[in-house]
Image 1 (cartoon, helix red, strand yellow):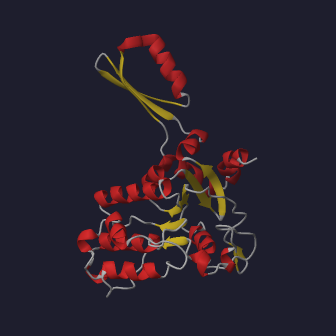
Image 2 (tube, one colour):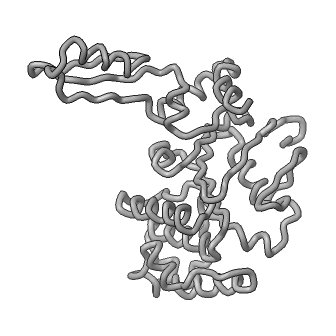
Image 3 (cartoon, rainbow, N blue to C red):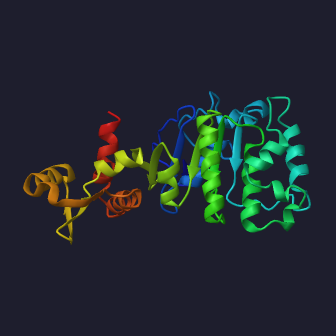
Length: 289
């Protein structure tokens, strides 16, 4: 994708399986928004091929659009509508193409039952965000785009939203593409992580697979005779084996902490921004040969 003489996206290639949850991560300016807008059909690409649900988004018709859902990062329209009335009205647009959510079930699914008769303008920030999610899934989409979906959520609302995402992917077989700066959320929700930097995908894999492919060390913690010990090692399994061979049942409170997604993400982006693009992308390239 090119703006003038500047390549914003270069050779971005990936696929999503049915019912899979993907998280697209990357620093500001990496090209995440441009990528999503091209997939949604809101922005024309300058080159390359794109297929979303078997259709080029640039040529998608209303029937195709009824198969996707979009939850924008911020949406402040419809402030005078009442929650239930708005969702019921929006659902009618999907009826010619499928079976939208039952409005009461949808309101309950996003935790707005007590607020169903309130105007959108009367909702708190977190409640308004729940309404955004409901609007995005009212048509029971096959593919759902979520942009910072839990911004403004309290911990309880965040937990309920995570349960909803798992329900959509596991029970309804909805494919979900998530963009977020909350790496802990991405690690909990996503089956696969895509890291975009400099307009290029530099990593693709599960959070665990990505952390294992990085050269970061694991931290081993244990206690012996009441004393606590901590050791960093690149071979946690081998170290623990030696530990038990030496001390046996004297070892207690054993814990192995591997690199988190945050550690992995920061290492990948740091290598890329430092100019070591080959190091950042090497494991991704090997995986896709």
